[in-house]
Length: 345
Image 1 (tube, rainbow, N blue to C red):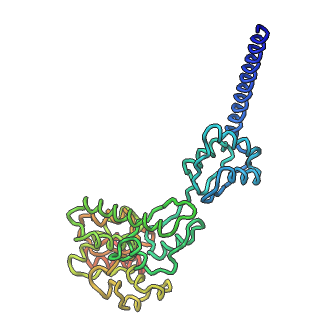
Image 2: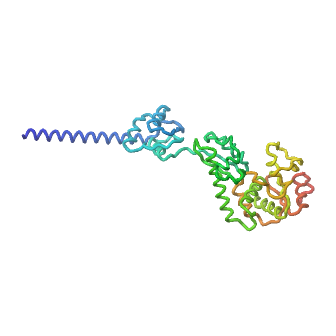
Image 3: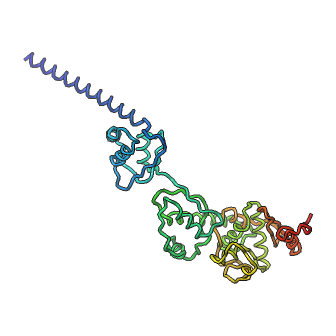
């Protein structure tokens, strides 16, 4: 009986010792795995990996191992399983910096910290030029090549609006696989939101409607790149509209000519009637002619308090503003016809 009790105690002690030893081994193994999980990957430089929809953690780790960026994928799998990581993976494109660790990678995969690519819609560009910028992106999916402007605006929920001008020029960050329509939707909503906010804070000399403000802003955008001159150009246009004078803006003529314009604006072009030609038609053109910047929108809604009716380019990016036709002709002689003797002192 005593021998049996001693044997039982000995067995229990051995089991406890074995269990303790196994716990120590497991703890040491987990610590070693954790240490490995916090060591940088073996990649020597920045690299990209693409996680496709449906990919699992073993698939991702195997791909990294095959690419030479991960020495022991099984160790990361075990550590991820033991710590409850790696169950959720968001598809997308991920940047692996030289100091990225397996732990950081798993955290990024779970949080969906995919790489963002910039796509620029430039100020002063037309809607078609904006589309070309989107289609030039190597990461965006082009879905609108065969669609008309009207189709695109209908898809954006604004069939009553023209495509021209109703998009906010800006740099948009996208992920690989997004579509051109995704970016246009963001840009269109940004323009509507910003225009509404600026309109609510407009000055007393602002045009009668947000749509007219947008069209005027597109003209200002094309006429000057200088922020300090935009309120002056806006004032000239609004003053001429108030007096019933034709706007006579060259950029509207060029826009109306479309593909017929060869880069050399002639007197014949100025007299060629198109819906956008502000030499042959009074008032505003029927649509904007470009994507206006926020600066141009603000200028139109807060024009300078001046009585200028004319402006002419100096040739250095700035303009001379005049109140009378006599002053304007003198400035034209000076800066356009190069008759320096006519320049005012």
